[in-house]
Amino acid sequence: MSLNQLTLIEAFEGLRQGKFTSEELTRDCLKQIKKFDSQVKAFVTVDEAGAISQAKAVDEKIKNGDSLSPLAGIPVAIKDLFCTQGLKTTASSKILADYVPPYDATVVKKLKDNDAVIIGKTNCDEFAMGGSTENSAFFPTKNPWDLERVPGGSSGGSAAAVAADMCLYALGTDTGGSIRQPSSFCNISGLKVSYGRVSRFGVLAMTSSLDTIGPMAKTAQDNALILQYLAGPDVKDATTPSEPVDDYSQAIVQNIQGLKIGLPKEYFIEGMDSEVRQAVLDAAKKFEELGATVVDVSLPHTEFAIAAYYIICPSEVSSNMARYDGIRYGLSERQSGDLLDIYLTSRAKGLGSEVKRRIMIGTYALSAGYYDAYYKKAMQVRTLVKGDFEQTFGEVDVILTPVAPTPAYKLGENINDPLKMYLEDAFTIPASLAGICGLTIPAGLAGGLPVGIQLLAKRFDEKTILRAGHHYQQATNWHKQKPSIK
Ligand code: GLN
Image (tube, rainbow, N blue to C red):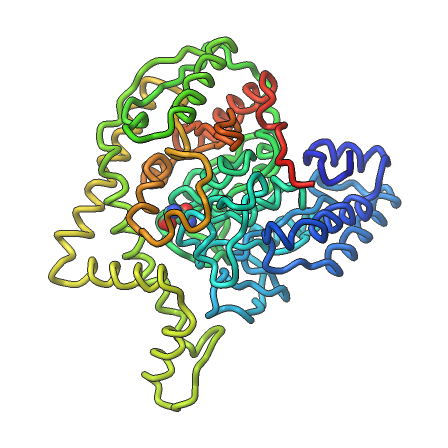
């Protein structure tokens, strides 16, 4: 087994015991990238020199007997939506194709303060708008399980990089499913944190009231460890409350005897893949064997969530994208010298069609004549969806659902039908609207393709889903299944 196949916790222990060095671990990841990334295309940028020099610095610290964080010396990939000082950050968009940020996102700074080895920046849907990574302006990422299929999205590059052992873990963002769904498609464990649990400062905004930052890793246990170093209030992000941060690694140890798990009937819709349905039901059985109680619950407003999201998201997109005007950042088309022309040509050339579609929908939904009919209505629906969860979490600790109606689909299969793409998000969007947390973990294979399950808990109760996920993974081997690219 080469070192890049280790989990974060295994690598941490190996480094500490002097079984190998951070440089060896980092070189194994780089080797894997060299070998397979021309096929998978998970990375927009690989920072080989930076990663090696960081790894050497950590090895030096270990030699000196310095006390180090568990993240020290371990290679991580970061979605190309996070500002990394001195390292290109593109949002997989032409408008930022050459943008080098002068500062680090808070979470990137936290990783650096913990001596993490940042190995590169991963491909995504442009500005995180999409669910297949096909909306990247550069190239689509392929699913390591089947190179003809999508890895999911928008954090598809991060998911593919972890699944293909090109790094030990990655960071992604999840606004409506972008950590959970690609984790499901690529057979990794991804955590969407509660809104406000992790600082968004320095992460390019898509939908500010929904965006969350989280880890994508090989196990729930690794996610628990990573979250410890990401979570908490940040003076630079006013939406991060001073809610205490749990000791996640400690909290997941306790067994799940007596845990109450709800299965919402609205998440078993017609048209969903029967093997996906079966995987969720099998997981429910497994949880029962582990001592949990499983009951039926109902979240009656689920079916309206997509419609509300696809008003709220574009509305905020139309505002957040206004800053890419050809003057302040990135691509600037200045041929004519006329200010309006600079705006129009830079945006016309720099932004892709899904981004433009959302800017138009959002501008329309927020316009004076339609605000009440669309935006206000969507916000009312959002409150109802939130209420569904509040009520249900009065009855159960965790809600168990599928992540997506189908396993990974073929490249090109859905991308020309935006509505079809939007419907794929039916199971991930409600939790986003409610601001609660969700964990995706592997739970089966359908036709040889990974199928994940989603565990939801109330806001700031990450420890409970991580605990449930960890105990599930101790009793099953789905998360150990690897794609066969060799
Ligand atoms: N697929 C959803 C969308 O296109 C979610 C994206 C995300 O979470 N960033 O909006």
